[in-house]
Image (cartoon, helix red, strand yellow):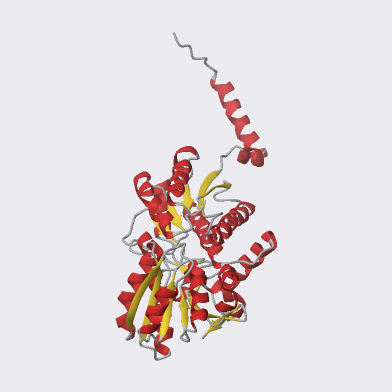
Length: 389
């Protein structure tokens, strides 16, 4: 038989009053009893794509440190749980499984790459967890997947920025060289689809493997077609190899790269061959050159100062993808009590959020939330980024 101990109404009222007084007198102690909200991170911290994942990991930790110092979300602290994928899709899937099933995270930031992100998306769709990728490929958010968002600027807008600049130079024939993975395929599709809109003809389409160390054969074929400009679409180290091969072959036409190489690492890898290369990038690489009335300038300079002071290394635009993702999630988590569907709905309704990668305004039909103002064109001159107006 189960016995229930009974208390008199007077004693019960006194006990409740004492509990209220204790909690109000010691708010810090009461607050300390709250659990943290865990945010998962999946990044290519090591391996060939570490130039992406390492600054993303650091930027996620920086953002969470700042949010917690300001009181957390609804008074509750955030906790980062981060795994290294090494750029391997299978390891990304394994890491996502750990975050969901073992760590019980509220949301996930990352992965760093389009292939690793696309590998994880089916699991996200099944488990229905708020997910903000740091990769660029359009296929991540097109077609729309309810739980999947991304902070990296769109391939659509990157291609448009390149073609706009090329058309202003009255060049009407281009050759394209794209990496053989989902990021390269997405860029290739847009380069072909948008060419006619700018009066441009793609006279040769070539590709290269992510690990290839020589592209002279492909470049020779493009040169034979009398292209007026060359567009390379990939992430390091392949694009740096292309830059060196272009110089070795004496190909004297403008070389454009994608936003996938917008970091100091590309200049380090390409060396002197980087001179004169043009590419679209987020504004972070030229933050000091922006006009004072640019809505992103203060956010960018604050982030740059915080990152470089904390880690004693030069900032890259890639870290900003994770930084933005954490702040967007923190904003979406407010008032939800951790309810994942409410977080997802709040993400989808964020408007005018000024971030590192641009000003975000999501909707039911746009889970990237950036417009063409998120990009500027830059030229590498004397090993530095120069704003092209």
